[in-house]
Length: 68
Image (cartoon, rainbow, N blue to C red; front, side):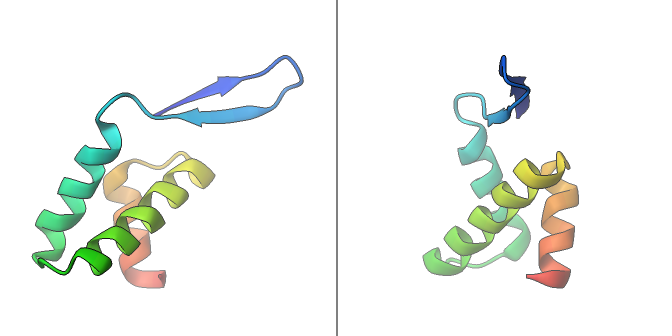
C-alpha cells in the first residue's frame, strides 16, 4: 500500500495489484478457518485499518483481533 497525495493535499491509499489478495491470504492463514464470511469481514477490517493508520498488514491484523 502506498499513499498518493493530490494537488489539494488530499491523501489516497493505493494498493498494488494482488496486494488485497495477499492480505486476505494472510488473514485466512492466521485465523485458520474456512468460514468465508469471517475471512471477508476480517480482511475488510484489516484493509480499513491499514488505510486509516498506515500500519502494516500484521500490525493492523493484531489491532483488529483485539478491538474488532
